[in-house]
Length: 66
Image (tube, rainbow, N blue to C red; front, side):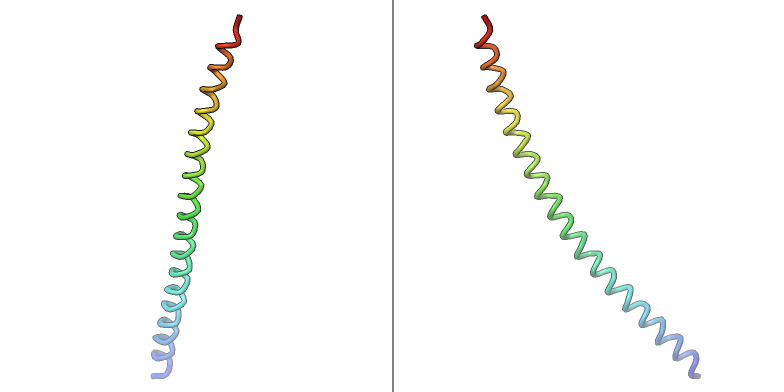
């Protein structure tokens, strides 16, 4: 009777460990997705700024032609 109880307890502890690890993975995925969203917003802003500057440069180049 001792061995089956020991096996059940060991299985329960294993499931608890897996639950803790799953929670840690979930937290890291949330943190990573927030960082990816922030990087995406920064890239979008930089892309818009680059387009504005490129348009200004194109106008300046067109105006400077003889």
